[in-house]
Amino acid sequence: MARSVLFVCLGNICRSPTAEAVFRDLADGRGLHIDSAGTSGWHDGGRSDPRASAEARRRGYDMSMIRSRKVTVADFDDFDLIIAMDRQNLRDLRDVQPTGSKARVELFLPYAPELHRDEVPDPYYEDNFPAVFDMIEIASQALLTTI
Ligand code: 4NP
Image (cartoon, rainbow, N blue to C red):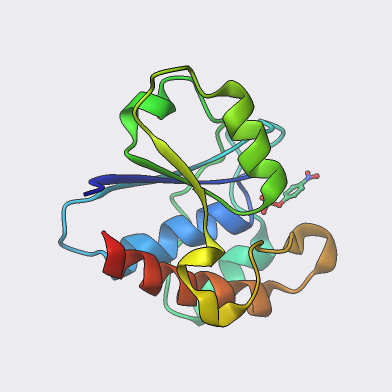
């Protein structure tokens, strides 16, 4: 059983902080440790993309407290489950995961097979925040039922 979940994308300003906000809201009261991080560190210390936080606000979530950070080696022992948004994130995570560390590292969308896709597309360039948000909400509900 997972007690802690880390959501990971490339920049930690669009997809993974959205998943963090949605999952925290859904899991309210379950005592889970929920966080997000990026594989790149490009936006370290920065706020989420305003397009993501505006879409979150429209749907009743608050991303204002979230700040971007890079994945650390310690994350692989601090979290039971590390959830990657796309296959490149998954590869990058597996490249740095210390041997014998406890975290399971998995893709997000296969938790919701009805979506018929494995990867959350990167909205930073595609500018498709509502569609990405829909996927994240559906997959978050599915993930919560398995925890
Ligand atoms: P994210 O999106 O990985 O969902 O946070 C991106 C954010 C920033 C960049 C790429 C993707 N970037 O190139 O700065």
